[in-house]
Length: 192
Ligand code: FE
Image (cartoon, rainbow, N blue to C red; front, side):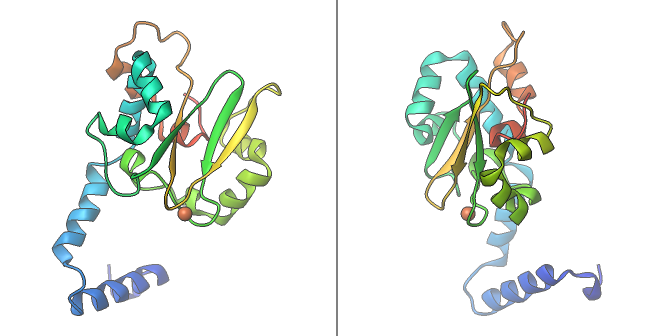
């Protein structure tokens, strides 16, 4: 990529990074390691393990809903942007959706880096004003008897949606269950 191919945001990021490195405030190797971790190791497969465990282990599910941070840590999952986690459970009568109306707060530790649309102004504003319309855009239609709860993430609290276990999945192994859990279902804008 030649310099002229950089987007305005990329130019700003490079300038900021250069200034921080030149000033001795950050170590480029540490930055590379951080980016590498979130690109290759941390992702929705971690959240899917949490969901699958909650589906097969009633005691774990109770711990997760009571206090998600230590319950998630039981599976060896912790880290940045996930220091205070709250799990919200979908039921036959309640569907949960997660947003950050102010910016882009997201549970990195269990879902990895956020999708671009999550950070977009239209999603952040519309999901509050018209959650069913946004869900329809994602292909999710809910019955009139299902209420929608929208959770606004902050720098302190990040939410993980516990989706409904798919019908017909009795007897599936935890690994088989984890494999069908999608990122969008854990944000609340997708079903399984
Ligand atoms: Fe935010």
